Length: 389
Ligand code: PLP
Image 1: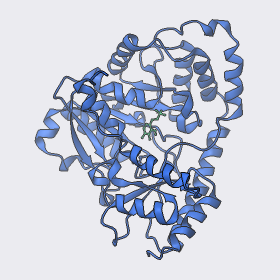
Image 2: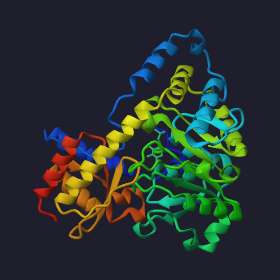
Image 3: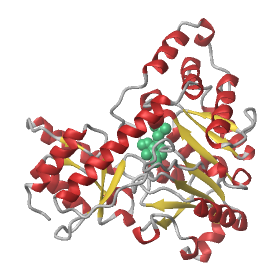
């Protein structure tokens, strides 16, 4: 056996692995578990995208190495998509990097821009893979608390002077995992001013860009004046087109950051399989009916979930985007972990403990609506029977 590198040892523990283990144990005992703890979209990839992939697979040109830095047709489709959907001009040759999913880009960016010891501002609670990216770059993390009183947006004025001075990079994510919050135009404007004034590069994780409720479409960060001068946005096909298993996404924005990402990727990969790139371009250029239908499905599930939980006496706030609700832990429980364990053992309902997303996640659990409305109501009924509220 060989010892792992010190670098690997610094990686944060996969918090949710132990939850999966506990769930598997209950399932193995033959119980019917309702899993609201995961973030894996339950719907299949739309048929027209699968068909485009099937056709593309038969093209022998695509059996060779894909071009370094991705297919031009996909980069052009991305530019068309950003112009059509957000009115944002993107130069395909210098302002797009094709990624193996959003996660790859999020983990790569710190390695592209930072030196050991540089500081990254990271939202807390937040998507745990941000931490891994920071560790792999041997950088340091300073958290930006996301609290209900501030609508789960960071308050730049509350950050320490030292943290701001040393920060080189900042990660944001709206619609937000895990809180379900969305950003406002004012907040993005304030972000550009803050980043410009302090020489900080902004990475906006737009993984849930296609999922917004109550008639409000989530804003792209690049719609903000000056955003492209100070940052990039990372988009993925995983959620908007139910293509999580395909592993494709992209970064758009500031050319120097895009160049750095491409350079790192030149040394690690060639590029995503061209047939997948073809299907992805097809997804962006086709009518967006499937995206609208998916949004409507999640909105309907959100409404059902929130109504069902309120009816059993749980004081919950409706998320404005993403497919997660961020719910307060009832006061009789010591921690989000205790509450999650209790629900799993006594109701066979899985929720993700907030502490898994950072210290500021304590006091909450994340509930995903990635199952049928019938199952969501069943989960509420099982929780009701525990007489917690
Ligand atoms: N960002 C956030 C906030 C996510 O929740 C996820 C997936 O769960 C990702 C990024 C990564 O998505 P992918 O790597 O599938 O594009």
